[in-house]
Image 1 (cartoon, rainbow, N blue to C red):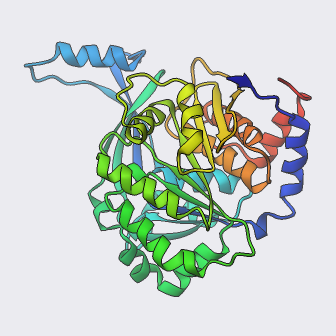
Image 2: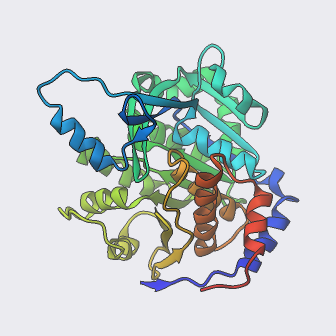
Length: 371
């Protein structure tokens, strides 16, 4: 797979120009929402010594089989979570005009979400899910209680937001982000509601895009994947369809779509999917790089910076998506969007907060065109 050439000056110019047009490029994001409690498991209860990898922690758990044991943790912080709210937060920091529908507390917003309401229009339709995120240098393990997501269906959105207001949110959005398809039990019902009630009412005068962030689809059945593929096909007349994945998710999508049983991801899977998969663009974000391609065209690898010891990893994928979406709002090609995503993800892991548009602009002004 060829390496993409990234014109960083062109990206910088687009980031400068975006500020003048952000108000006419709204984003609508949904439909999950967590309160994340981030913890780091300790090796030693008396000292700040932590596990260096998921594997090391897993081996420790295996050693504890048949026993009752305690594992000390260090609480890092409590914050908003969920692919939708984290993406909305990161995009708002990049000057995007965002609305977010999800599980953020009812009848009032949960306390961690109140500051976000100053930056993003929030429409909460359910109680927050709870999540404990176990952080390791090489990854994370999420323990989630998503019972509240069972109530999130199209009828709930209509009743809590109002049919007229809901339709207006979809009509005004240039970019729709369907986040955490895997975590929503009634994701198919939401998609059918969009296809039935929203798409026929959309104006054909505007170009709209939809980004699907599948999240970890391990628990989804083959039938549910078939429903997703059918919905993606049906959305073709109304949206440019973008599917965002990580390597693990790409492997599972590939296996379900091609009826294969591959065990390891390879970039060639993207090349094959781009021939017939019901999406106009696919992007795969990995550590230090991304792979992106449009339907029927060769895919490209986009190399970015790599961090060996990130300060935080929970939310890195959502911040990648924020950079990618910002590129889409700037009308940049997929390779440039992926470059923005790479930098946004690394910058988040360095800062423990989303990068702003101006910080991204400064990063891309530092170098001229690179390979």
